[in-house]
Structure formats: structure tokens, C-alpha cells
Amino acid sequence: DVKVTQSSRYLVKRTGEKVFLECVQDMDHENMFWYRQDPGLGLRLIYFSYDVKMKEKGDIPEGYSVSREKKERFSLILESASTNQTSMYLCASSLLDLQETQYFGPGTRLLVL
Amino acid sequence: RKEVEQDPGPFNVPEGATVAFNCTYSNSASQSFFWYRQDCRKEPKLLMSVYSSGNEDGRFTAQLNRASQYISLLIRDSKLSDSATYLCVVNTGDDKIIFGKGTRLHILP
Image 1 (tube, rainbow over the protein chains, first blue to last red):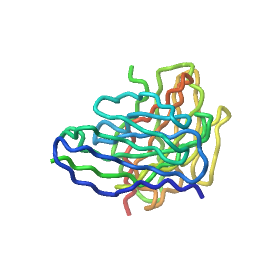
Image 2 (image 1 turned 90 degrees about the vertical axis):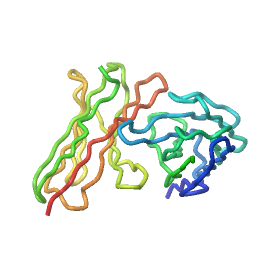
Image 3 (image 1 turned 45 degrees about the vertical axis):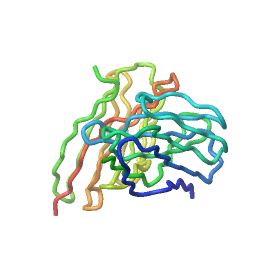
């Protein structure tokens, strides 16, 4: 069974704080993704990575950065959290071909005060 | 036209009924299609891939209509446990994967 884990289920941070969201997958998948999901807006891609140290911007990368130092781990960084970054953050992974199924982690619900 | 569009619902359907919903996509070069299911406060999970020839998995049937650029999901003999949000996912072929906003389904006892 593919397992994607995320470091926290719930997180509360203050405006201006640096926030790290960690994602780990155990299936040796090449691709990893970070999405945010908001009511009425659906899932929006922030960044994705198709290999170690490689990253590509998604649809809404502003205010975020990512790090992929190891194949199994993909981190999302909010350099200076803002209230409009309050959201559900979902990590996913898939095999090399983008036509492959994406497997999601349980999500991190982030509240920025 | 939006890249991937779904009726948000909710569809309120009595248990045992058949329900179907569609998802339209704008890029005619789109290559692969999926239906994901998302339960309340949970992560999306793959329900089924959608093949050109259509595919069936138990009570669920997925179809692709390339000419009209939509995919469909049919659920027969609906169960209470089918209540969820169903997300349409389209791989547009230029390394872009787009999720629809989902269709909410409520199965009523």
C-alpha cells in the first residue's frame, strides 16, 4: 500500500512566521506535488517536483517555496505566513508518468492568525 | 470555457437510485482522465481511471466522449456510503494535471 504522510494534521501559526510542511512517501515515486484546497476553489497546484532537487511552479506559487533534497521527502515552505494562506494543504505523489495515479497524504489544515 | 468544469451539486439521491454526473474539459489534446472520490475532511482517493473504451467497476461506470469533450460517472444502486465529493481529473498532455472543483453527492436513506 502506498503511504503518503504529512507532518501535521493541524497547525496554527501567526502572521509573519516561517512555516514548514513536510511530506514523505514510501513508494519510491518520482513525482511529488503540493496543493491547497479551499471551499469553492477546489484543488490548486502550488509546486511539483519530478526528481530530487527539481521543482516546477504550479498555478499559485506566490508566497511559497519548496525543497526536495531526498526522493521520498518534499517540503513546502511559507517564508512569511499570511492570513490568506489559511487553507488545507495536500501533498501527493505519483510514478514518473504524469498519467499515473496520484496518492494523497491526509492533509494539513493550517490556520494563520 | 473553464479548463475542467463540474456541476458542484449537491445531488440528493435516494438510496438504490442511479445517479450520473459529467465533467467537461476544454483542451481537446487532453490525454488521460480520472475520477477521484473525496470524503468530508479526508484526502482525495482514486476511484477509477477513464479509458477511451469506457470502463466499469462494480456499480461504477466511467465513460469518455472525446467528440463532446466530457467524461461521465454513473453510479448504480447507490449506497449511503457513496455520499462524497467526486473530483474529475484531467491530464492535458502538457505536463498539466487539472482537478475539477468536484460534485457533491448525498445519498438519502
